[in-house]
Length: 347
Image (cartoon, rainbow, N blue to C red; front, side):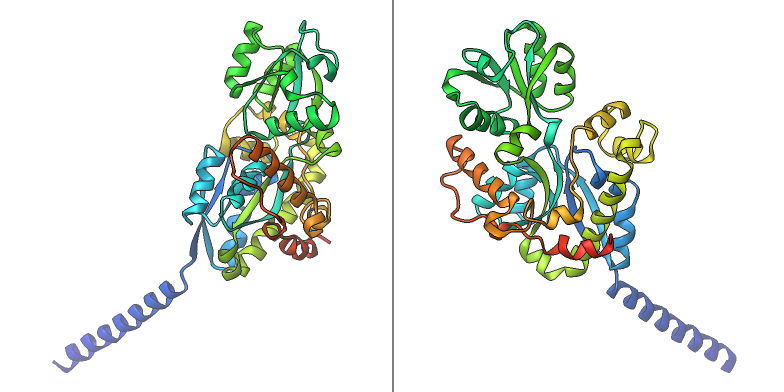
């Protein structure tokens, strides 16, 4: 009886210890975070695919639920409801969200849209230069970054009244179909529609050129401001991965092929043909950490590039009746602090 009692007692003690260890492990379980992304290409998506983010964030106690969203509207709604604290939005989408009261902050420029959005004139349309657009039919998705740059270029660069051009609201697949029928003379759009219409058209301008003369359009990473303040370890680890991946990606960009691991990773997450992904990457610009933190993008307060882009986008959105009125100052919704710190990891 004594032996049995002692054996049972040992089991009881061991069970208690095991239970305590389980509770202890639970207390230090990783914090789960939803990060929203869209179908974009570049080092951000490549680093999701290869596990770089997951590894770095696990070390500081976070587990990421990578969630793909099909549109800017969907991810903006998720931010507004606080279902997603970190995610991807285009510059006009960020402007619209913060103007409507979503307390988010831009902390990384994923890409300068550059030449990946362009105005193409159809062969035989008679359009050889911007002045020839007068009286012509131009397809573009309304309230997009392409629409924004088209109107900005017409008014501010080419001195053409938008009313002098027949600007038609078309989504990319509609543009391709109308182009093939000969129903439109030109279009301002992005890949894969851009890739298709360029086969039988001429480039009149692109967002790289227009952005350099006015304000750039871009895709960015935004974070819920209150959440970021409560999770400094996540933000530090996350932007460190971004800084390192952008440095490495830019160093290898010119040598990437459809068989490169980076390309295969992007295809795995968002689909598409590897060769088309390579082509799309060559149309985009990926600012490194130093440029991110500079006045060109996130630095500079009200005089910084991103803040100026938001201000110009807000005026555009008001004209399109998407917002009631622009904010007086967009600089509180841009921060270079994380990029500043991340620069130290790539020196």
